[in-house]
Image 1 (cartoon, each protein chain N blue to C red):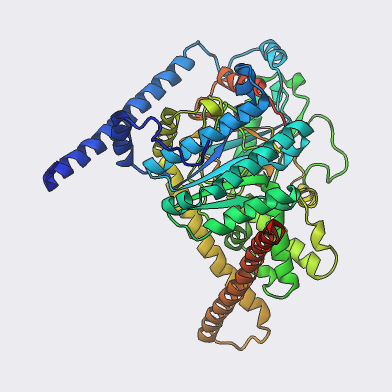
Image 2 (tube, rainbow over the protein chains, first blue to last red):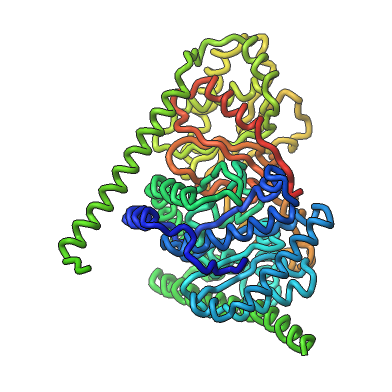
Length: 335
Length: 261
């Protein structure tokens, strides 16, 4: 099945009315999915495991459409965990084949990507994947990187702890190279080094199959996300489950919103204190007047922001370079 | 079809009203369900030790480390103390008590008193064979003092400062170590980070988090530690009965971990 279902799946007037009603309340902008239950679905329906995974993919394509209809413009899915490499070789190969096929298919639908203006990002430790899978992923990411209307993040060879460590290495390297100081490290800067640096945090996390844990998925990013655990196997997930999850989000919205706002205020306060402390610790002479202190703090803030800007430019260009190189290699091998 | 502005306005109003009505209905349904589940007659403060033992035997599994997230404006320390004492009876030996703004953290003394009271109510003096230690940031953590009895119960009080901010501090530390060549860049792996965090907190990762109150959300609870934690919610910790707690533990007992396989 294609990434873009040809006919509108189940878009009746009932759905349109429901959407209109739901949209009169807050709608999450970014939703994360843990698509759990493909294998149990296969067992339940006496299928091959592989078939369960294929059914799971079809459901994803359908769900993306439902999300766009309702105003959810960014979706992040947990496709393959680093832990999943522990599964039988047969199943891992099957999942790699699924990825190979689907990303190749996506590249055959270039005009549809452009038409829908979809940006596809793949997040994870891609080096763990077979080279040809890396290449086809890089091609998709590179091709769609400037699209803005809708974003799909596919977490592949991903775990959150691994992601956090990758960000830590990035920052430690920045300190080592002298681009930033260790005191410049903050929550905000760490977020800019995570794989999800270009996305806002998910507003809503949906996990299917009734499990009630995060399983090493977006641990940092979902600190203030509304959690929705749905007791249905992923291939059986329906538009009504999605509506239910949105209602759940709306019910929890006020308390979560106020927690996020106060956290943002805390961050700003902490940063100001940090800047102040850094200036205090560097000035030894005690004959500075208050006015010059405040101007020095101001200067320090400007310097810090400049350092961070340069560092982030370095980080991003490294990432772009990685994908560019893979794309180039594919081209040369392909010819 | 031509729709006038006022017609459009009425339609929008209608949609908003319908959505509000829907939310009211859900809230009512939720409340009724809550009432239904708390129907069986419970005697929260008057149960026998015998009953606890039976309950504990029935449970399929019990977490070693229990996290409690309180997201209610009004926090009742006696209820939290009851929850802790009952959970100890069920076999829990580590607790992380969390609220976003660190209210409980500041009420350490009061919690200790509430715990003493709860212990007196629940168990005969002779059966109280364990000691409860409430840890603070600056204080010694479990294992640090070398001797620890098997009957020691460790409690840590957490706020959001122990969450993402702790990872920021870890990153600063690692950056300094890399810059001063004490550590190589490639050595920053989940296991090293885990080591550093364990050094600070000394607690295993919680197997279960109980979340009380409005807002189905973790509210910044330690992100690193909750990788495999089961998250269960209850309406409120106020007047939480013993059987409501065992219900939650039974629910936890039904969950299965596959660790990616």
